[in-house]
Image: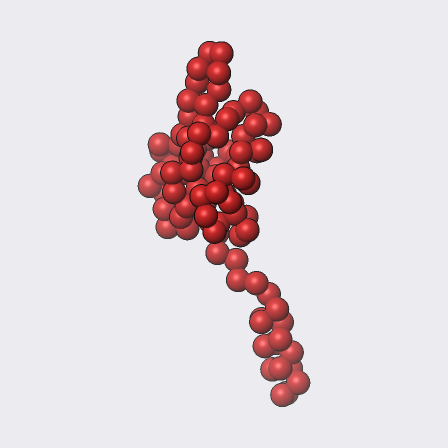
Length: 94
């Protein structure tokens, strides 16, 4: 029994806690000028700062011809619902 408890504690300690992390951002396309506001999910590594979030998100946007203008904020799942309507089709798209 002690071995089973010790094994369970070891597995729990080895599993990283994953707290979902998101960023809201502004992006643009040129010729013609188009702007959009969006919300994107970030990896744990990109949650630490706006610079890390930008480095992770910019290439994803660029694949569809968008240029990241700025990261507005980084937040957890509690901020998703209030941003959903504003992001429209760019809600968790990138």
